[in-house]
Length: 606
Picture 1: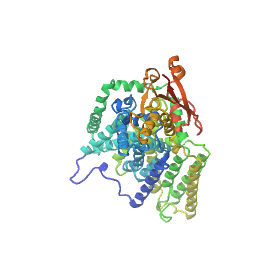
Picture 2: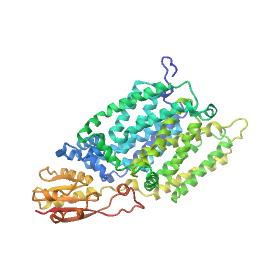
Picture 3: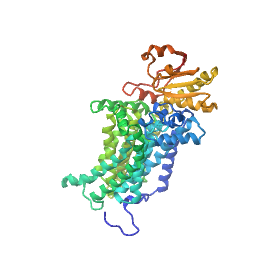
Picture 4: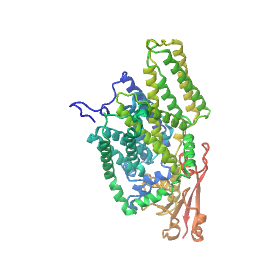
């Protein structure tokens, strides 16, 4: 990169906040952020630990007998999120719902983060539209209200790729350190957190290689492949990325060292291999993932798409400075939005497929048409987002179609759609403004367009009301059953012990019910179990065993075990859509009605 004079900074270091109407933009950002916050904190009483993995992450503090670690927790996630959950419980006085707020906060922070990153990369309209899609994304809202790893992972990944972009362009030590730090945090949150390094590394490599392998004639049109002299050399760029990778790996080493006592990373890899479907199952997994996202995104995702479209079509010029051609394009875009929202109201359009198609178009435009004063920055960013989008489109369906695995890909879609909308708005503003050979706009056409935009607002309102509340389902089913279990086992028994078989979510709620009722560990012993061992080795007088949907079948056990277990009571449990989609990742899930899952309390007879 050419040497800069003292007091100047590279384009990547300058916030692109010199656009007109900056204060109006900040107001829109604030409104989008508040909407995102409201959607994530709505009905807080419905948030509760329910998913199997949630129970694993949140129950560490309830396992002093196992070194404050739920058994085999290392197979499910690195220690960062469980550590945050543990301290959340401590600081809240062991309030059961407190663990949910880690992801609620991360999900709320994600909205302005997406705006900032997308704006820095591509422009103000890209920032606003990407943030709007993030704020109203039902998939992101749903997981922001859980105690799973994926929302926090996406937040770290976004900032890791952003700071890697700055590090590659500027070589500033702060940018290199922060890129490595955020990549390390992603890796500490989920074992696939290394994807942050893979995205920035592959995107940087494509950015470097493309100008060297593209013929000169094609490079004249393929803007991202044009050779430039205002960027860092290939050696410097890869050296800077290598420094980022070293910092991230060094930061993750404590996790790797801790795993050695459990068999090293080999044990984690072996566990993950069980979910790998390979190329043979790729297409089926992709179709299932799209179906899963469609099931949980019937309403508010369309609100985000509609509002993002209105941001683009909303008039930016007065009738005296707007050309007829520009007004005509705005009219056509608004009309398309009306038709699209109407089709969405009847369930005839898949929102995820639409976002994916729009993202592909946006990234293609970004690769072929870079119209940015900070072009070198936008070129690098387009390659990074392209690597993010394509890489996860290929990699995600290689695994069992758990819905949460799609979240990083959805983030890439938001960014790609932002690129498209930025290009559309710039075309409307720069290419179709009034010139000497253009006809001045017609006020009547502007009026019709405004009516169409109002129709879009009405349409997305109706879609939101018709779509149901799948992201806000009441997830307190296990919590209610846990309260009943504690009542049963403490009513007429002295120093009872409860073994919870293969249900970490239920174990979590039982442990906190004991705290809530001020019972000591001696008054009520609660332990997690992986088998029916309590039915054969128990020496206490009042021993109970709890089974649920994830427990091994009692019918498959020995006659001795079956004879020693006496059913006390059975409760019907209705798992929410989130749990059902994971339980039936390879089956068909249609509608909102959940099948009843029995939770049984057995007494171990002497």
